[in-house]
Amino acid sequence: MSGKIYLVGVGPGSQDNITPRAAKVLKNVQLVIGHKDCLDLLWKYVIGKDVVAAEMTPVERATMAVEKVWQGKDVAVVSSGDIGIYAFASTFFGYLRDNELKVEVEVIPGVTLASAAAALLGSPLGHDFTAISLADQATEWSIIKKRLISAAESDFVVVLYNPIGKVGSKRVAEAINLLLKCRQAATPVGIVTSATTGQERVLVTTLGEVPVKEIEIDSIIIVGNSETYIYNGRMVTPRGYVEGLGY
Image (tube, rainbow, N blue to C red):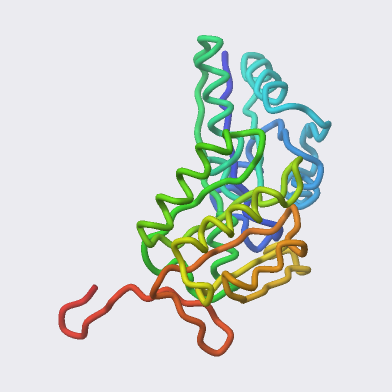
């Protein structure tokens, strides 16, 4: 008899961001797999359970999860933020496809890093936005540049994930320069580092003054659109509400 795999997003950096649904799943499964720093956050939910916190590649985690499910266990694989956004879920489904495997899977969404950072900044995601990862191992830079230019020309608010990679700050510096070709230097920008960990740092600046050298591996950047403004230190993108008509 096979068990079930739960892919669980546990939010960014704080137990306060763990949803009741995620907490319920963690309390009911027999095995929990994830990175040590993530599991340290979940300690009260995994007491008395089998826990695997060893450093493993995503494919190794997927392989172990499937093996344990075939042994009849219910397994949770955890990830910070939302496990379906720049995280483990797509890799896991790709592993199942590549190996022609079928197991029962349920994805448990979590608070995203983008929404957590946006809340700390004010309301920069109040209107249409796009998220682009600068991770230098995931996508060719030529493709990322096309996406950045398209987003900038379309006046989307732009959320930049993974600004620092194996090539350091080179990509984020070039990304800012590309956006400056389509946006005013005074465009509001929010940079949040270590969001919701209790040690978060929040900076509201402008596109022309982004301190690239101060951006860290756990930073996320939100670049406003042509209507985004800063009021009383908060970054806001209006949605266009008209009294009597609505949005």
